Length: 257
Image (tube, one colour):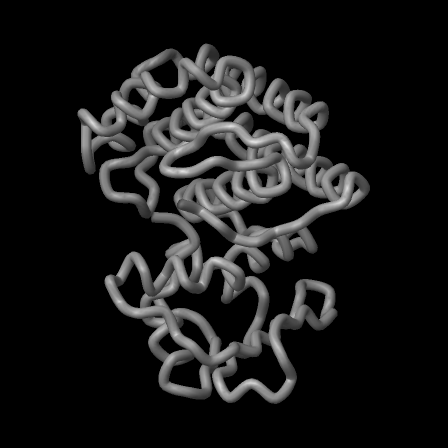
């Protein structure tokens, strides 16, 4: 069960949706200018086409969950049957499509997802993998995944990426999903509170947790987001940790199962 404990007002959801759209548009501009989608990305076996196919497939599944939740069982059964190869097989199937077809599918899907999530009541639950979600959680999750897979494409393209304030959504998921990291590593969740102090792209401070917490993590928001999405190893970041549990968290950090 995914329980990030995120709450949003309607205004906050609108802002998050705008950020989700902007994240997709930024990646769209990059891949549209790439003639060769067969370039390998940091994800083993995945090309640029695989990355876009994965995002397009996820959007299609979100639409199923929102529009026909009773049909989402078929998606879950397909994933269960494929096991650990599900994402690879799914991405490969999408990547085999012509570039123009895949691009249009991704564009249409993400536009429809944003429209559907904008109209869903904040407290309306719908099925997802191992959980019931609401729009307040799905919006930042879609943004996080778009950003993370987008980072793979930027890396493959050799294009520098300017961090934006949209990272705050990713960072928030990383912070509140701390227990997920320990769960995935089959470790008991820490009992002590954590303090996370990050510096945003424009120099602003993003802070979570009590000021007197012994367990502390500090660094740039970009490094933190790269770490929790597992796009960079801990050694490749400038993040610092104080406290045994905080040290362990940075070693095993993740924001998805």
